[in-house]
Amino acid sequence: MQTSPVTPEQLNASVIAVPPLARDSDLKIDREENAKIIRHIEAGGVSTLLYGGNANFYHIAPSEYADALNLIATESAENTLVVPSVGPAYGTMMDQTMILRDFDFPTVMVLPMQGLTTDAGVAAGFRKFVEALGKPAVLYIKFEGYLEPETVASLVDEGLVSWIKYAIVRKDTAQDDYLSRLIELVDPRLIVSGIGEQPAITHLTKFQINGFTSGCVCVRPDLSQAMLSAINNGDLDQAETIRKIFQPLEDLRNEISPIRVLHGAVALAKIAQTGPPLPLLSGLDPGDTERVQKAAQTLSDQTGPS
Image 1: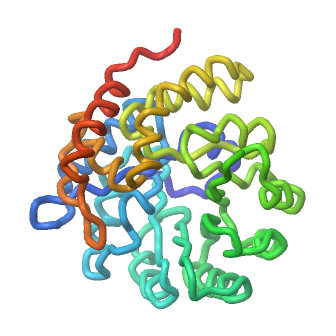
Image 2: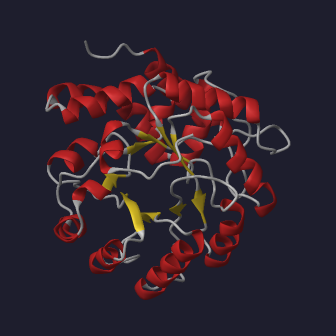
């Protein structure tokens, strides 16, 4: 696992995979199956792993947090960047710092809390977490009204932010007043698109932000990495061709549940046995399983553009 600080060049060099966390039938973290997921992603040329929403770190037990960190740190390759998450509750993230101090992760992402927050309160909590951790953290902007662009800029100027995951969904990705204001105030090289392959072309070309996160990359890491390379090389026709290959599975994630569909898709594509999702989530409904399996297998078997 990489232990050196994250650079803008690194954010742009690899898709940021956001994998599920495999569990056994008793809901215990399964080291062997998680290792299969990690090695599958790395074999596809992807060298950044972010354990957040798809791994359901929102509901991870404090008693298993250290084991989860140990697994993702030791099963990843020497040069793989691994980023765990904390929170979303303030008390949870502050207690998790005591466990994180035993590891050498170069940064950690703060999961966004929806509701029961204010702009000033989120900023204060982020500052206190970074102070306790002793290194800059990843800021995850997922909801309108969570943090104002000016507040984000102040956190960046204070040296508290490693990078920013931007994931506010818009009907038209190209029309985004918040992101337009954010890139006026913050170096776009510190911002990555946080909603997978579908908006990535627009985010990286129109707004000039720096890379993207993906869940479906866990099924076809080589294709997702090829899409990032195509965007960086200005081959937008090839990038669009690859984007469309990912769209059927991504449409099901949007329709049903991003986390539940990806958790099932990794297993249905025979990459690893992910087991049951951690409550408060549940697995796919029987009526959805066949559709997800078809989309996942089609993506897995798809030949990429030459």
